[in-house]
Length: 226
Image 1: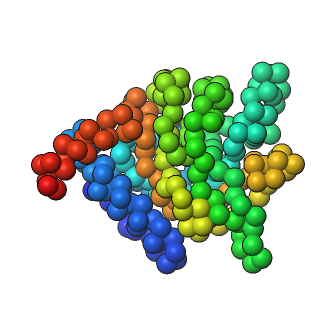
Image 2 (image 1 turned 90 degrees about the vertical axis):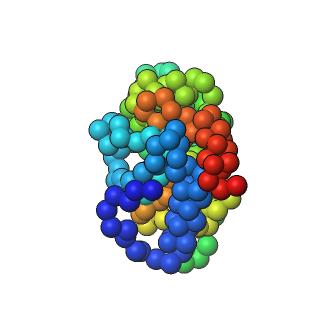
């Protein structure tokens, strides 16, 4: 795996989480399609110029502002678009993280904040991509309409590790509710993240790690690991 730039060190918990994710990604994705996966450091906003270099299996350490939004928030955004009304957030080059944090404990910045299943947002996603959204973070496969829209718009779908919400929260350095506070944990929040470890699943040229990754990994394992 190629490492672009010096690896920042910013906290033992974040390092443990990041290293665990990247080690797993390196083991399973390092030879996708016979091409070495690359590790990138990216900062939001995620313009098409920044994203065009990414390919499925690449790992990313993401820093900057992202929005959380789940089912209920997506439904409200979709209704506003259908009514041709302004949205409460600017989707241009934006990142949406499919997550709803648990209640925040005393003295903590945010509760556990792991990814939810992305498929529940599939029905809303193509319209959001056409509105300017360039990246999504979640877990699990997307339907064919989303895969097509991602490729057509030059966007990216990232996977975050599931089942590690408390460790994911360690990447968050700021958290503010933007809108829909009545939705509780599903309100849209603006998070500032530092070195959030992600893996590219859907890339801007139509690559889909969930489709080709298992086959490539088995071939690699037979040749190098067994």
